Length: 281
Image: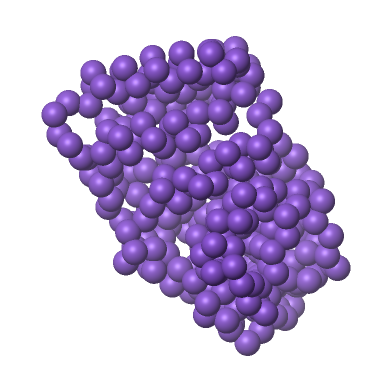
């Protein structure tokens, strides 16, 4: 099993490059999050679990929201600090800690956010119980995902990668067997996560957010998986990881064609949970 801290430390300096969203579209995402969570600049207190490089946090911190960010990766937090110019504002607290080890008083936060994080958590039930405990009555938790919409070409190359990477990884092989052969950022992944949470008595609703279009070159696609190749191949030797990556790169070279860039369509999907009780920010 890969080590999450080591993995994200390794990809931190290139992470934002592989998660690029056009600036206008990103602002729409921030506005959408503020709207669906009813953030109040004067009263809301936010906890971001897996804050990472501060991609989503930074604009909210700059607006003046009281914000606490937790991340298991020291290097990801260092990237956030670079964006802040090395200075942490008074309304921001950053903690280098495992999500399951964070300690706050019960009902400390009006809002808890996560972006892609839940897929990496093995003990989801423990994290969910912590979220419930830390939320104030009437508080809101959201989990955000960027979903790839019907780009079968990119899906096929993604499928090729996961089929190669799954060799000897029982968990990944089982996940592939249960799906259509790929584990890309697709809508069904969010619905499966929703089902998993509901089995843990954590009822959420799915809210579809802004859509956007972005360009992807062959080198963008290769860089994306090169930066993330260890996440499912940690069970292999470095030589085996390199062999699999080069084999997949050869497939991409053959299938990409002459078009320099391809357009991909994405949409924000949000899983939202509101804690029962009288709302108090």
